[in-house]
Length: 94
Image 1 (cartoon, rainbow, N blue to C red):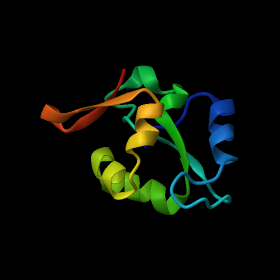
Image 2 (image 1 turned 90 degrees about the horizontal axis):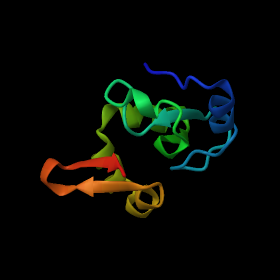
Image 3 (image 1 turned 180 degrees about the vertical axis):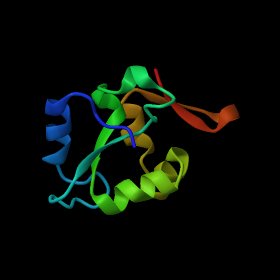
Image 4 (image 1 turned 135 degrees about the vertical axis):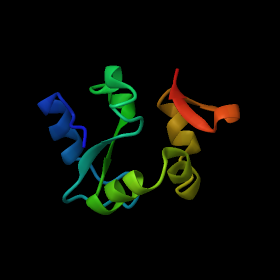
């Protein structure tokens, strides 16, 4: 599993509520676009969200596009400078 390389950024995302349920304890930072595919985004805060462990595991079980649809995160993604590429069915950062 990829880790957030900057300890201050990691701490910040452990201290905010889960993006999906609002739980305030036990949250972790999750990379929306994987660090393996996008190592340049490892510390880019637009690519990291705080989520509880339940939703962190769900993000890993489902692909990003399915999570966006399930939790209606389209506006959130657009506000974070992501765009959706329809022909490849994926989200990318501008």
